[in-house]
Image (cartoon, rainbow, N blue to C red):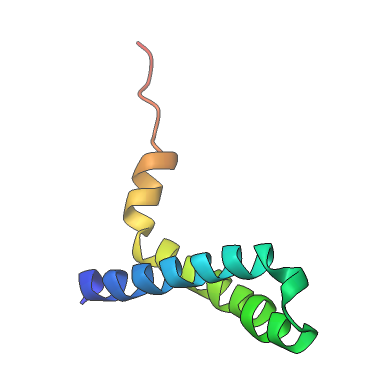
Length: 73
């Protein structure tokens, strides 16, 4: 279940990230309405996906960044 959820979230993250980059670069070529829909609203989706991604990978995050330091003896 978790692995399947991660696969789905990772694909969505990749697509939304590419959308953010493309619409950011093409900002002047887009109408205001298109920019809001394609960039600003997708930014909300991006943040939500990042939160889900971190939650699903929390054990790795905890072990990679919050390691207990061995007592020096």
